[in-house]
Length: 213
Length: 341
Picture (cartoon, rainbow over the protein chains, first blue to last red):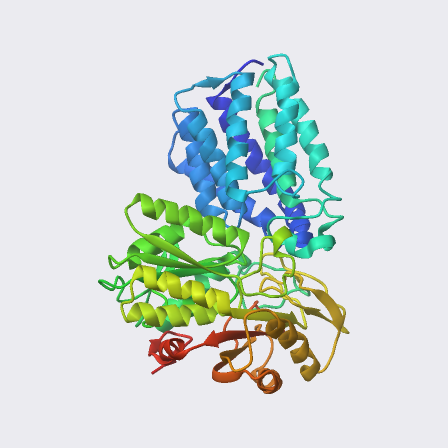
């Protein structure tokens, strides 16, 4: 598969909504250990709100940029906590980066996702190793970039595998950002819920871009 | 059909975990509709007479579950509007944007923000949106929790008890038509000279989580707890009220900026599940300790003003006072939860 088109972007969001809903209890469980136990519930509320917007507006947004903007604004106004501005900002950045484009090749998708990562880092001020979303997203995008061929599905598969591995790799980390940072040493030994929901989002993206989809 | 919610684990006076915030707002509207206006989409609580022309608007907000903060402090002499998030979850930028728009009397808006990652980011976004609409916004932070020792490698000290005092004092200044710049300056002074620390005897249960946010053995207490049940400095063996008061007062007093001869307000807060009779036992000892250190208590506040659902426990806040702050403290306030003068 060579390009991500509007229909793939739409199935990405739908697949993400499903995955988040299926795993909301698990995300909340992770968040209860080192945060405030609301990540699953908040993300589920956000993606449900997106589905409602899709239904309410009748047709899907007309292009990639409009779709990502709608997703970003909806997450911003429905998720709350830190995840709301971070994920909301991520999709708004995707919306900006896709302005005027109706499809993205592998290189373009890489750049668009990098723009999303940059927004998360700007707002959250997190560095690699702080035990946050960045610890799954940055290595996953690197794995995506390092695939030299143009096959989107294969590159996304590499990204997903890296994200899963990197999310697990947050377990021994000491949290330096967000509420988990108040635990200091007690944050060690728990997987970061934000890094975990990043991995779910990438899984959803990969499944929406499988060859033949 | 009422939803069956984790029977045997959680026993709360609710109808459905998902409706807690909205139904509580409806209750506030029913009880205080004479002085408050409740907006539901997006949710915020505003003064009935907002916007007050020519006055700086004070807007705060945060996760629900800390009642009466913040909605109970909306009214003459305190906040112009408050944005309730889901329980223990920061509200969203659209709430702060709409609440600020509804409150601005043309003299600018001050956002009072507790130092939590989510609150900071959401208020920051709202401020950007408001500036885009030509509305001047200043932000005053509270980060008074001395329990957070290493603020360099964490999200920094949390905003806790001082927030209540901040809202009262800045609210009085705004009511007297102080300028945006002066309120911001005063807020930063208060931020720099107030310190708090809390403790928990028991955890609390977020309605949609259905089980306690942490576990605490029967013979232990969490010293330095945050208002969402974030862990504090350490767990210690359960002790007498006097001993616990000492454990709270020592880190507060040894932290800057208190010195012998200072005037202070002493605020003993209940976390939600601790009765007033116990808070007075804490106040008794805290006042003794303050006096031993040469601090003069010129004003005080005792009661559950910034809570963590049904958590049992207390927090103590000390703020340095002066004549100007005492006048602002005594100025009339007319809100559901704080009313005098």
